[in-house]
Amino acid sequence: MRVLITGASGKLAGFIIRELRDQYQLVLTSRRKPDAEFSDLPWIEGDLNSFSDCQQAVDGIEAIQHLGAQPNPVDHPQLRQQAQENEIPFDATFKTNMLGTYYLMQAAVKTKVKIVVMAGSNCALGHGFRISETPFPIQKLPIDETHPCFPEDSYSFSKRAGEELLASYTRAYGVRTYMTRPAGITPPERRQSMAENVKPATGWNPWLWCWVGSEDVATAHRLVMEASMGKLDRSIPQHDVYFLNAADTSALEPSAELVKKFKPELADQARNIVGHQSFLDCQKLERAVGWKHQTSWRSHLK
Image (spheres, rainbow, N blue to C red):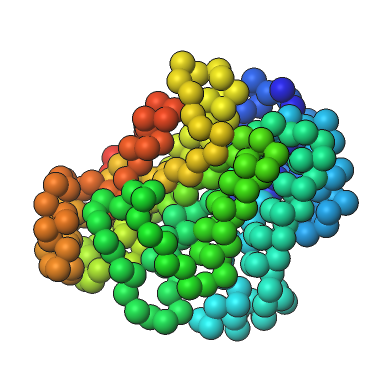
């Protein structure tokens, strides 16, 4: 099976390429050349914001691992100055994450791509990058995919809207589409750094102390794709969305203690949370494809 990897020069892409390269025929596409480690794989220089580039990239492709994205809201009031200094247009996030995904899906339909697995974000909830500075309205703990989303910024909105965009292509054209919601993607060196620099919490973390190992994201993306192909001993819907994060938090304190100290109004909702359990629930993904988070930052604690 020929699988296209978009955003192939990004940090996550390397982990997914390694996860898939021995079993699938990979084609890479990105604006910048991927790491030299992958120089033996075919690479198509291209921009998601160009429909013709997307058409070229999907030619002969059966499945897509869509990783290409603008990774933060460059139009956010607190981030705009830095983006301007780096000569990033104010609309780069919306264009790449929305129009780029639309172009890719349009091209995919024309060439009859069967499966698309896209890296979304837990930011689809709207708990981070809050412009209004009002607290994110947590309605249940742990948070699962049924929790309402309240995005305020272009990145979070683009990830939430991307879920609906993919769902529309499943309904209209029968393409099997899946969106993961990874949280704080963390490679090995960052896990080491987390352990070396962690300190007791001094306040509520709007990002919910969530993280996920890069290798674990790669495994999840492979399993979702293979489940959609019928390669696993389980079936999944034609379209779905899955939280994708570690089973524990990045905090030293137990999770219930964090709630009691900083969000006592949520104590009743957190009554069944034990140990360092994550505030985001990944049971849906675990049940769907048999995924289990494997990496750890706590093993580096001294």
